[in-house]
Length: 261
Image 1 (cartoon, one colour):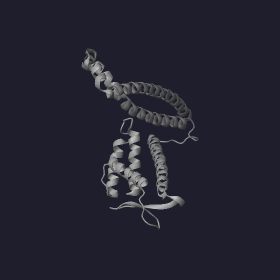
Image 2: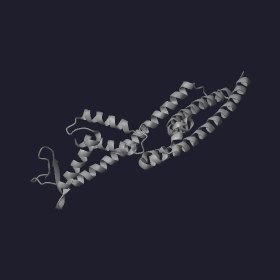
Image 3: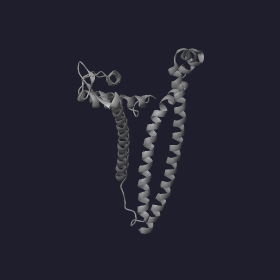
Image 4: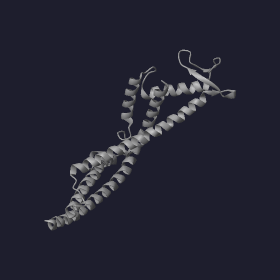
């Protein structure tokens, strides 16, 4: 029985190595196609976004009309536009399946060859392990992003504190909110501090406009508005080239309003 199991294990190991090679070749080919189509699709988007005369020159001439009316040519254009997105999702699934199947089969073959050295693990155990690794990676990315935001927030706080230092001797000023908002010297008479006040009010208004909320918004409304905007411009959802910058601006605005509202 041991001889049979060892023979089956060796055969399974060879089959798994072949399967792993097929997966690797397919993944590399798919990555190459995605890279090429992404470059072409970016060029098409750039041309279409330029509009005006260029749009008229390309599509109003007979060649452009023939392309739009030819289902094969139109199919190629649609393929170039949408394949990078759909192909990327399929590539991620393919990599996941490669890990699950090859890991499970390698473990099974080793278990058959040397059961004392390798314990058997079910396919579900590998799936759970992979999903846990994905979750850990996502949390790590969120942690790093949060740390970056905290660093930006600390930098903003330092800048804000510098605004509060004014005049000879480093006199401290405090911003008094309300109908008669102004900067006042701590422990002294009131003085206006136009530069800092103007910068603060400009940042405050810009943050309100960005999150589409009004002055006096409460924490719950602010959080709801932030989630709505963050979901709309999250780089994993929004493929616009400026989505990442917009997403960071939304986070900065939310952090600012959370701190000073």
